[in-house]
Length: 282
Ligand SMILES: [Fe+2]
Image (cartoon, helix red, strand yellow):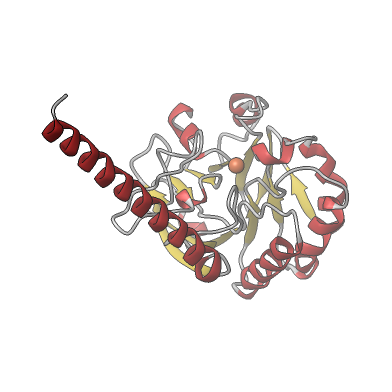
């Protein structure tokens, strides 16, 4: 190799090093900004959803989602308590907890859940929950049942409940290998509307036509969104439908960005959300 080639190669190597250092610095800066300024933001996301075949008698029905609390420490407990207070202030017809109530099982986590959701005892509407994949990390989602019952929350695992003349179908976690949507749906009263609550949003593509709506969480909205809209760290079964309302899926779908975080305890351009959904016939 001659001298000029050596100089050229080392200059390219130097520029690549600088580029990688710059990208690492930008990434670290973004995480720091997210941790300091974005993680504690909690937005009440009010949406009016036009739902095909939604009955006129239920026009204006209000559902609040408290998704992905990922309770694990004092900070997540406080964040969830704020979310519950925001939910109650909306005077909804129904509150739904679409999974990942905890981050993982550890000593004391049930007491944390009890504290985080204690405000639900004041709720003047029914509260439903389904398991998420994290509710099985190092344990079993069914262990949440006594605490939920004490708070007035009904945990649905591949079963349905009729409330206000609607079949609310709670499907267990697909990632945890527990989902049986068909068994739950086939048990429903076919004369009533069906709303499916299923933690993993991308599973909407597997649903049969029939239900009026599906409600999900899991994706955290991507949690980290670059200024140009790219989500670099999406999750399994939570990458196709990241957040918001999808009216053209086999069953119309709403995905909440949720309350908590997973992985780095930070968010970026993707604030935590209490979803307030007003359902109207479309
Ligand atoms: Fe999840």
